Length: 286
View 1 (cartoon, rainbow, N blue to C red):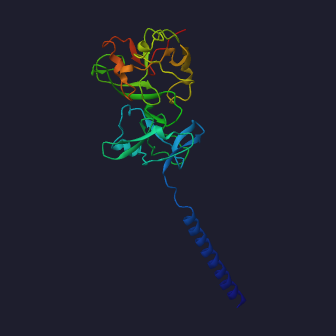
View 2 (view 1 turned 180 degrees about the vertical axis):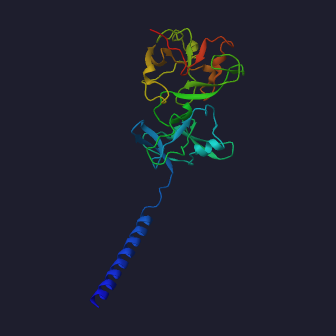
View 3 (view 1 turned 90 degrees about the vertical axis):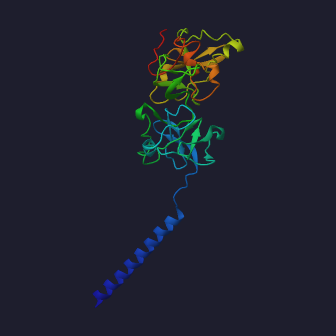
């Protein structure tokens, strides 16, 4: 009889413990609802330093094919690289709201941009801190606020409206080229020598034709580039960025527009006096 009472008592105790555990679990669930994704922040990453993430810490990316003013990642691409969009996103410390915007995609949906670059997730990133999308196809890069240059990949269109390849010859070809962080094309002057700007002469009218790309220092570069191949020189009290010994310039007729590449055919088509910069750019020797 005692054994029977003991078993009944033990069963009752186990019943109470199970109910307490379930109640606690339910309480925890109500106290910790899923985090609302409502903004962008800078998060520390072991590989890349500070990167752009959503407010849950999930990494965001740029696509170099988005050289123009819209997204080129659609259909199946958008499954692998889901769009990030929040209307009026909350902006984390260290970021400027003026760098954020939005575009309307070809399917009519919206997408958030940073410095003109549409923002994406990578479907294979499973946890905060994952950056598995960086470097995919040499076209996808983890989003950062401190890139000194970016990489674009698109058809070049000269100031004459014709299509050009990476050698400055008329023809259809998507070319890889360097831009500033806002997607504005950077050029080299074929008559420059190693880390020597031979174009600028400190005459504002003259220099406005090919303004130099001024930076105070070299910060981050996309992972397919070698940061040691960049340098900074002083030109008439301005600090100009240099790549593989070539001083870097804008083209005035691009009018500061993301994706504009009018300089590839200037002053005349095929002159090859002014060129884009990319991984195949020949280094100038000292």
